[in-house]
Amino acid sequence: MAAGGRPAGPDGLALVDKAAGWTSHDVVAKARGVLGTRKVGHSGTLDPDATGLLLLGVGKVTRLLQYLGLPSKTYVGVVVLGTSTATLDASGAVTGTWDMAGVGRAEVAAAAAALTGPILQVPPMVSAVQVGGRRLHELAREGIEIERAARPVTVHAFAVGSPIAPGCFPIEVTCSSGTYIRSLAAEVGAALGGGAHLRDLRRTAIGSFSVDRAVAVEAITPEGLLSPAAALGDMAMVTVDDEVATAVGFGKVLPRQVLGLVGEGPWPIVGPAGHLLAVYEGYGEGLAKPSVVLAPAGQP
Image 1 (cartoon, rainbow, N blue to C red):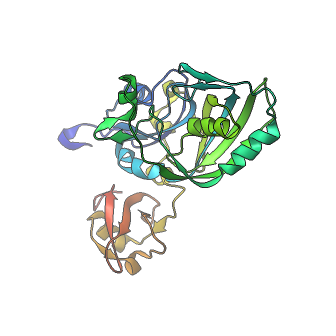
Image 2 (tube, rainbow, N blue to C red):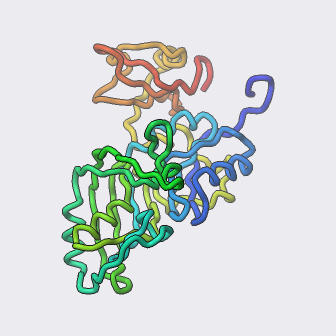
């Protein structure tokens, strides 16, 4: 039971296949109604025109959202050569045109290869990045453009397929969190001596979570949620015995050796029954402290 005698709401992770035309906030609002709880949040915003995998944290898992964007993400889409837009995708006003009919797959693939690996990327003005307390897309709607600092990102793979129409090349990109695929499309166009924009963006995976396992937001159920432990399944779990689990439940700072921690963390801590108890992070020399405690002492 929750505080005040109210029934506790559901806890878990929902894998949603977002439809085009929905904002990520729209999906969260719908999920709150479907699941009957206000405690829903999302990890990794998708643009309204984009489709694909959106991870929703429900109940206690809203406190784990900061960890859900850590793995790499995979997207598919189409780079359209010869036209640039104000938003870098198909929704924006055309800002330039070029005759790029002679550009073939080999040239596009070479431009993509040059953008593979650790790169610096300037966030587009239509992004949700905050500068001076304002989101860039809010400024863009007011016709304001400001200088943005380049950020380090990593493009792990950037594959280019054969054209599906003149000047339209399907792509698949696996990248670090914070990478803008529309910017990659524009950069490919610029590298080829013209311009380009992105269309049909779809996120197909976040770490080991695949859109193949996702459902429409209207179809999510409390019974279909993944457990908090499964939500952090891409992180190395640390299992502790009952005695240590009790200390973890009290949120104690503990020696790393007691917890059996190796590496840099953060570390999800699970009890003997496999329930997620907390997430610990390094704290000083040889110690670790909880950043999130899900199961207070005495609770599963």
